[in-house]
Length: 157
Image (cartoon, rainbow, N blue to C red; front, side, top):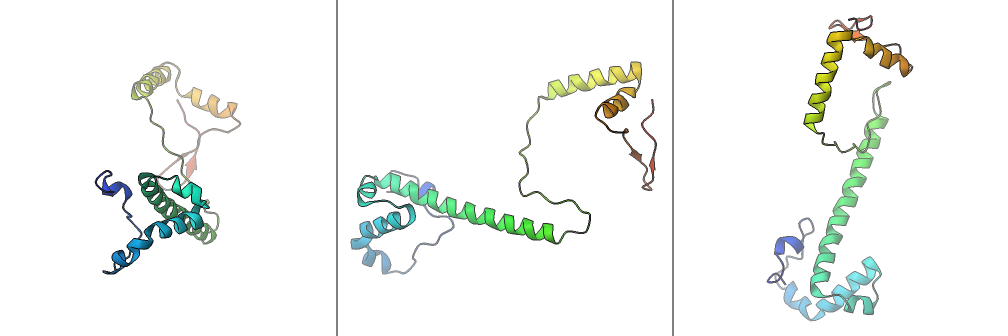
């Protein structure tokens, strides 16, 4: 099998195969039956479904099964850890999310152009546009904090 497929594509990374020295020779006559039992129990394959598989397909299904088990248990562990962390968080602290959104790539040229336009507008008109934006969205305006933690006023021109 490894002659046709790179072994790192189909070998188990997390599950240990039987390391008993005599096991492979003892199991060899029963390998097809053991493989069928595995597919029947784990995937609900019938004998006809199993026999329709090529050895290559079976090897990739074994690898995909290992990846799925590892992924599912990792997700379960992360969910439990997140739940415990949220349950034990300090009073008033924000819940931590289980999933983080994937960061999107931005076109840096567009960002730089927008920053230049913003700087030109601020030079001509000041920072009043920021307060207008806040008021249009129902906020009082940005609060700027000092190092001491005291809040003071709104942004000025």
